[in-house]
Structure formats: C-alpha cells, structure tokens
Length: 177
Image (cartoon, rainbow, N blue to C red):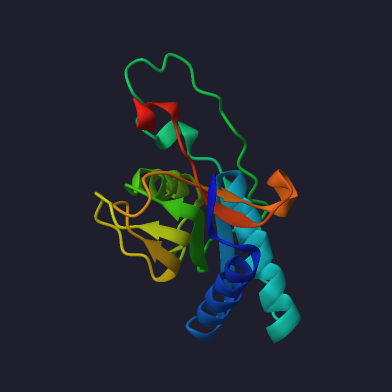
C-alpha cells in the first residue's frame, strides 16, 4: 500500500474543513457521520471547533445500510446502528463522509436523514473527494480531491480504528490479473 495523504496532511485537511465549516455557518450546527470513519471524522471536526472557537457542535452517527442499493448477489446486509440523541429540527446538518466515490452513500444518507425530522439546512462534507462521482450532489466542504485515474482504490485510516492516520492506495489482486 502506498500512502497518498500522510498524517500531517490529513490533520491539515481536518483543520481546514473545521475552520471553513465554522466560518460559513451560524446558528445550531450538528455533524452526522456516515459509517465508522464518517463518525470519527465528525468527532474530530467537532473537537477542533470546540478547542479553537469555543463552540460545541453535537455529533451523531447515521447508519445508511437500509438506504443503499446493493448488488443482486448480496443476500444479507449487516445493519449498523444510528446514534442521534438530539433533535435535527431547525438545525444546520453537515453530513460527513471520509471519502466519496460515486456519491451512493451520501444519497443514502440524505434518504436516511428524512427519518429524523426536518433540518433547516443540509450540507455535505468529505475528507477525500474522488473525481468519479455519478450522483448529482454538491459538496460544500472537501478536504482533498483525488482523481480516480491517479489512484483506483483508496482507504482512509484513522488512529481510533486503524492505529494510524493516513489515506492509502489499496492494491487488489485483480489489479494484476
């Protein structure tokens, strides 16, 4: 595996995203992380805003499993758990994902969000934006854009889950067939 974004760069992206989110929003902001990595990223962004701007941003986790379309050969799906212990009514919701490829997960997040009330505004944020998105979604906050032609497959690693902070190029066996 080749490191595409190292720890220093990843932390700089988090600082930039948190700063941008704080400066372009007013009122009640909440973060909803999509999946484990989205939740970790949302938590880090919230901590940065608290430390540097003395503003608390509530963080929740939104499971989108039931809202994603799966391949026909996937007979079973593992459901995760959403954890949103606060109202979204009249709040600015920032949906946060570690990386965006086609946009399918973000669409699922927008659909899942409809089960939790009516936010005032919904915005999208990602650490890594791939230039291969096929869905009509606008991301207001992007850490880094990486073309799919440069690297076919990426994985985002976080200390909380993987023991390191970085974005790596993942090489699959079928890439060499």
